[in-house]
Image (cartoon, rainbow, N blue to C red):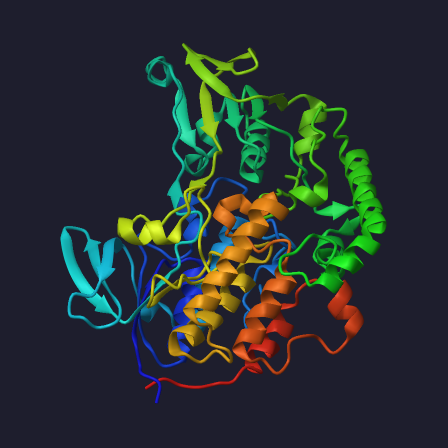
Length: 495
């Protein structure tokens, strides 16, 4: 008999909903905590900037049993994703499991000697403790703003300037008739720059440290999901854990792989006009692809051509009155400074001793299958396996994690096996694929298929690939197919 556990799910976004469903349907007593007033995580409306939309097509950004509505566009807007997540929660009656406006202040091992953790919780003025047998951390990688400051910022604000994090830009009226500077190289930076240019900003400067490869929604007229999300394309990158034979085959095909990526670079440079705007990246595209590779914001290159957005390579050095001085010596007059500098990684409510076991000195995370740490029992992470198909990734790891917690993986790893795998992955990231160190190593892209293959094998899935070998090799991950694969895993109930 598998013990019915009391499980805490921290976070009510994409990952928290997946975890709550996975543990609930196995019969566990789930209690979820979401610090905001609503589900949605980064898609919660008060956290979304205008015109935000998915980087992934809608059929790559959905749960296996709940496709996005047919009338949604290929790349849904933020409010549509938010509504979709609510519909998923309603379909599986997940709201009954969550307490909104409730924050996890801290957590520590249970004092009663039982396995599990004690959470210190806060809702309004009420603070209390609750014990749990297992904790699923689902706050992902975009929970706390990365707040940066520069010399002279207080004087800039005192002179009437505005400085805000990208998530605080919620209304185009904020920048009407303003001289706007957007700092950052991510898609959120270019999204906001385009939105500002289209909504009455007096001027828009986009400042970035280094040019990076950007992928348009359509590459040479073909939806990029049909070119870049294939198993055949994934196999051309230097993945972890290759056997001697696999390495020999990779060496044999290396000239063809090199030619393939040079061709892709040439196509992108020609289609987007990268050379004209001085934004040709220095790094070969195959060495850079990870979760940080942005999709081209619609209208970005049209705005660069029209001069409504001016791009500048560099970063902030300081503010001087209403002038932003860059490290390259350029000076930009500004009224509004929008810092699209991302989010802070971390699990701040974990005790320091636990964080030291979880995070290496160089910021890399020690997690097996991007989900658990053998030195932190009775807990795991959903959403640490960021990817180009984040919703599916969250659902896959949630189903893996509940089986891990219940000892129901086909091969339940020992602490030594997990440690050896963690060390192998750390060595691979540091020495073979530095791009994989992005977000503390918490990214499975571009290796979606390999990551999912490992999870399905661990879970004992009887079916792990589509019956059509051409579709499996030359098509993108299919959410319905992965629903079938999950259904082929051994089923059980706790309690």
